[in-house]
Length: 346
Image (cartoon, rainbow, N blue to C red; front, side, top):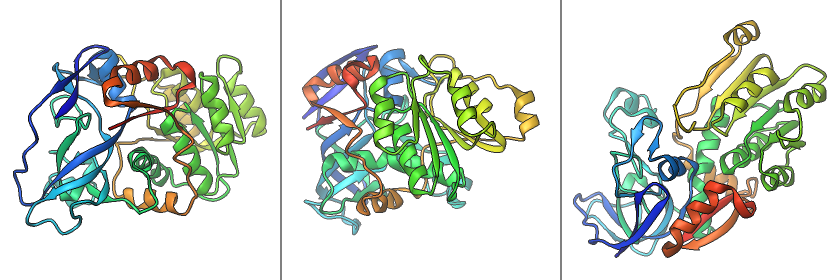
């Protein structure tokens, strides 16, 4: 079968590799049909690392994916051959303290698709996953819809952590796929005033089309001034940092009202560190929450899409075959051609 290997920074090769083998009676053999190009995988592509985790080349990337079930182990009851599924990329142990608390996203022994040192990614024609990580797709969902469920589940988790409620005002700082889906989650949660920013014009425009009350390009607009003026100096209830940049962290602290909540979803490139204005944070008594993937939100994501409350199709702007994986990653990494979300179809 074919797989796309990252063999060096910014360079993929398509290689023939052995077929995967089922080893446990709870395993599911999958024919991969689509995979999303995610911002976290872009760090591996551009920088050769995610945070402090260094890539050991060659490596198979990809963790947002959908597939068709080819074969199931003897203990599998959730799916059968021919079923269309989405994949939860985080394999938790189910036995550690955090798993027993229901916080599997913080599992002490977690293994994750395409994370350096963990599991191979999904940029290959077939793969094996445990039954617990296979989520059946509704009949009217496309494979691309299935790909978008994983990032949407992260945004739904962020909305839960933010304690969003009707009447809130929100700011989305960075309107890539995660930012846009977070915007939609905030709006369906009852936000009455929403701001979205991005340095890519097409992304700011898409935010407006998906329901942002105001959208700005920070290179052309003083984001802090505009948001404070629009809220009569009060600031917003909740800010979501979705770019992984120091500038957006700074903006978030300034635009939050006293007692506001700041959710950090973006993964920073380079040195995995931010600096914070602790005096401002203390005086405002801000709540700062880092978001770690998602937990128990796949079903919520499916229901939001089924009810047509969340649009996961508009953000998908570009499509590539597996053989053009390098082109897909290069396009997204350089923000060319108005790209928002690129998907690799098999």
